[in-house]
Image (cartoon, rainbow, N blue to C red; front, side):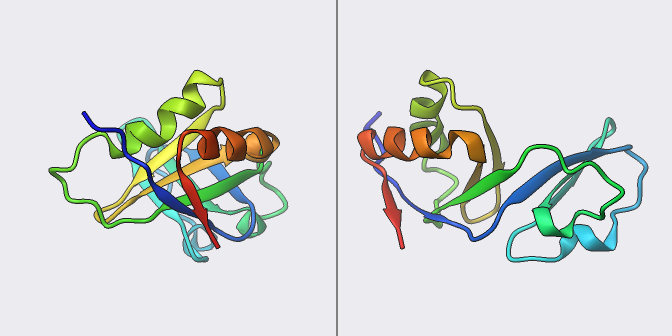
Length: 129
């Protein structure tokens, strides 16, 4: 498989990742912002949203930054997300990945961003303005 050299953008602001009960109603604040994700499984309701959306009575957890891979990527195009996250994983940078119909988003805890930026550059990925 040929290595993918990808372009990505840093979305503005900090993000939060929260877990709620599987039968919880999606809160209104969870879907406000440039990028949000709500995923329900039999085990949980997972929420990704701007940190500023989190009500004060809910512990927000770690702060995350969000990287958007420049897609769209065809479903037949394999290894795209792996090419992006493998160098991070090999350098012990934890990630949270979300795929959409057109592209992928990778969240990285803010404390790892400085190292991750260099790791991605060294892997041949390009940050766009």
